Length: 483
Image 1 (cartoon, rainbow, N blue to C red):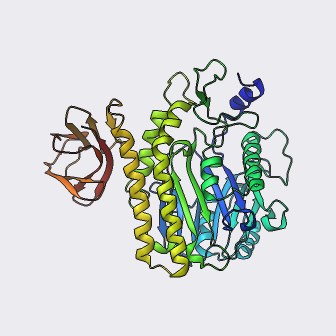
Image 2 (cartoon, rainbow, N blue to C red; image 1 turned 120 degrees about the vertical axis):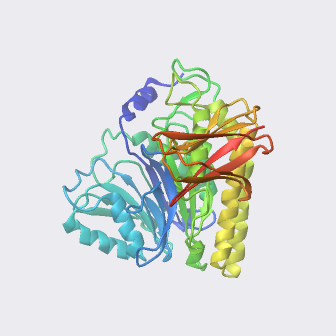
Image 3 (cartoon, helix red, strand yellow; image 1 turned 45 degrees about the horizontal axis):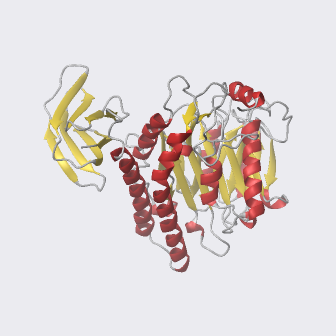
């Protein structure tokens, strides 16, 4: 039975809508000597993606909402400058006019090559005003990392290398102001506790940060590990864990960990690890701005397939409708049993590439091939999980305007798509990009939805992509078919 203090904390944090947990880490305290910045992004909109932009002085990668082009919520540019943030609720109100946090971060990625340049950008915005008070973590090619607690017209800077601990953790309040009664205190304390323990043991690196912090379902006074947790929390069934005030939460929609190069290595080896979906049950994939693109699976087309698959995994993990904010730790353990080997494979391949590229500079194609391979491994692993769960039916893609429903064991696939005229073809590709089916479509002049059903007995079980071609658009959605 958990303490009442914990349960009250869970209830009190439920009203906090947009809330993140973040950190910046000097290379002197990481096991591999790579500096890092980290963000668990907690928002309402579950449709997350990564995009490559060339609309500024420096090209850059950014975590965005699907379909979004005017904001950046974390990212890294070709100069090695990286940024992320968490809203702060104790440093005053935002300015009535000015730039929001997503606009500031996009502006920084477009134009800044160093932390000093970013500081000068903030100086210039002190007179303009910032509408969203927040803690912004940054890193540059020199390996320096810092946290800026930025209010409407002023900021306080904290530099990791100037602090004895060598790292900075924040949630949704700033340490330059009154921290009494801040609702994100549990996530701040829990993350600080976990990071301090890892630094003392020499374990802190990007793998540990993802697996042991970003995915964490514990509390400052409660550690449910190893999963599954077999006890009970209040009146919940055994194994159910409230996930409202945890680091990996019901509203955690993505995780970004950006690592810089080791001392002496080229800045091009800076790596953005992107996990789209709730981290406790999702996979991370590496990206490099030098690839000059984002692989299929993470880019929004119109939504990111890896994000869609993680959302489906989330539905499986939140298994009790009576406790919609509680995650089933038995299912979390099962999911990670499936995903664990793939995560190890992706990590090992990325490390091998980085070691090789430190000796011989890679081309854009080298970066692109490596990140596409990693995304493909993640897609195949999600498909493998659903192949082992054929009784979880029907399987429906998440795009309401264009979706595919499959009925395991019946060899029937139903495509549902916008019923306007102009639909030309419905194509089906497998996870390797091979076309496995193509259907000519009649026009649907009536408003509403069109339906196309076919017997799919010839398909093997696995992950597929349906592509709807019309006169001037292509819409894509993923689906899993199980024989």
